[in-house]
Image: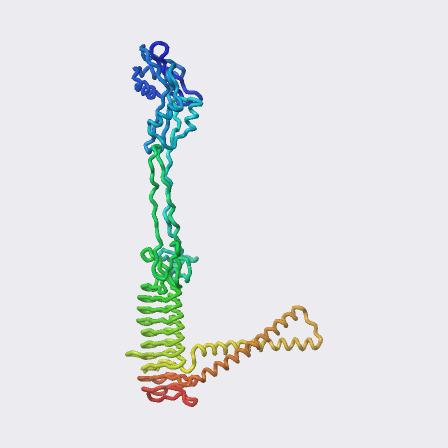
Length: 527
């Protein structure tokens, strides 16, 4: 219990009784006693008050010989600066003074204009057991409840700064940077988590406290993106690449970069790829649409389900590879392997392996094919074939390169199967002979022979299927009777021309002619 004081007015003169604290309570504070006496305008000696308090025992300190009227019980209400808390401190009545009742305490609260959050239980506790010079919590305001900002959750990487990965051996992988955010039609790209509104608060004086403001965001989107009816979900309307453009979610089926190099790494994309500059050595580009290159392609790998267009040509450095299910158009092809399901068009081909499912068109000011191997199903057109230095140059038409590649593959596979049969058959036949002679075999030997027999049967069946497919392919080879190689300039000696598996190696120069198959031979005719 805290120490407290009581005014004595009933025994002649006026004095102050000082009751010390008990059980670890707070001691009497001299400034509190002096403020009380100043409020009542009773003279006192501060030195005597201090001496009485320091005794820590029930002490009476004289104040004045004059009689003072009785004083009733008092309370002091104090509010916090933020107007959210109030405490009440009670002071004992004089020895002949009256105590405060509930109504009087309520009147004091009203006089202090406190109207909200009054703790009635604390008032009741005081009335049941009066303790003086102790702070009772009187009222507590209600804090405003903060809301929550709305949040946008992007379900793709928004980090445009691609960083190279560290390999297990400590080297840095600059090729696979994973900078493309692939998406499929119907994929969820972003979600909006709506804001939560806060609730207002109230001070002990009944004043309204507005909740903190919150940020309300909306989903922004651009092309090829749909938003749900409740405006909270964005989905892709087509396959492609998703990215943020000025906080707008956009999907494009065309992926654009300046160059394919250490800044991008390898590119693999569902749509088309447009490269403003170059594809550097050793990098790979794979696409399901078209690949358009504004600069040059060095010793790189490019594969697409559509067309490949290279504005300034390709130097494959003997390792570059172009593969298109559609067409290939390039300024030049040098030391390159190029395969197209359709046609290939270029201004020159130098020491390259070029394969086209339809035709190869070499046109322009130079329009030469020098060195390498060029094949097309229907037609090869060029101004110059070979060179004065007799560079080894082979041109083949009349056979679909894809079909011929399959035919060659079947030939190799069939030869391997036949070779395996030559090794299996003697073992199987020898074992069957032993069985006829009554020789008993171990279970392991029986199992081994059974495996060889099954393998032999499978090989024979596969050989039969391969031979049938090869016959079908051969009939298609013979059907390409209009295939030809057209020279609008000069074909130099040493150039080899193949038309439907019939070959001709030029022994002299040919000019302005067409090479085609005529009754089992390759002949030239003027154009």
